[in-house]
Length: 158
Image (cartoon, rainbow, N blue to C red; front, side, top):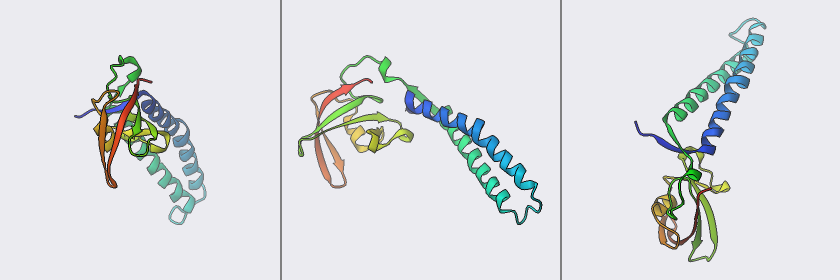
């Protein structure tokens, strides 16, 4: 089975969500089902059906998170010596040679990606173009709008 890379922060967020689902959400839903059952006829009880639907969603999400955590390989990039090369988990500052603007991204697992917060998936076109490159190297990213030329300004292990 292929292990999926994940940062320490991403694994912690999943564990926190799992803990919330198991210790807070699940008991709340069980209580809502119990209260709805007390109202009588279950066939026409909208509260009961809504609570059962919530329970189904909650249990599905618990299984999904447990599966992701079982299949992931947590990589702590701060414990890896900085060689100046772009690897999973590094924070990279790119200089766009066309617009003359800099942008900073952290390379994370697919489930952690959030472009607005500067986290891009390891499988994204930008990440694939950067992997294995060093500070000062120029890369070309194949984007739908055309090729974009970048220079790798800085590689950090944060």
